[in-house]
Length: 184
Image 1 (cartoon, rainbow, N blue to C red):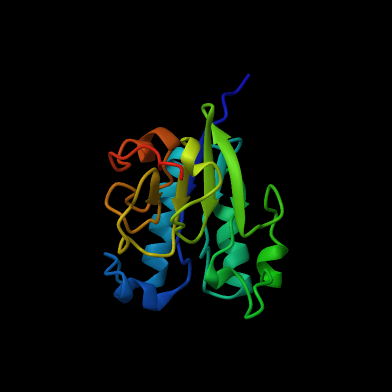
Image 2: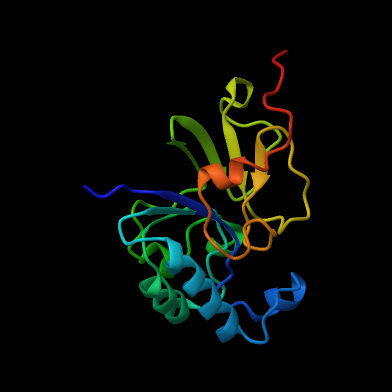
């Protein structure tokens, strides 16, 4: 029996040349960035593991997204980001056509080690069960938004994520000291 691990990350922006400068990523080209991200991903994610990608998977067009997707290990679940949808909020067809483990969605509640986790590309001030100890992982802000309560950015640009999918325990270790929100 193989033990399945769960991993979390956001904002890979595969194929997005401008993100290198916008987020001061330490790469000289898209190819270098994409290869580094794929190698980091595959160094810890096994084919049977589950990886939650919290949006902005790619920005390089349909063929590029498909080629990258095929190189990545794991059972991939996409929580949609702003670069994954059209102007009406619908999943881009070329992303919809990829072999995700489940249909891409705008938000998702899951569990890991018995703890509830709300997943969204966007940070929320409150989220389902936030007053009962649930955790919230998000992306989009590229480390420019302070975490509050039991929430945090899991984007690849954060120093403790370091362009690598991370486990719940790894990410939970750096949550702010405040553990729950008071109820009114």
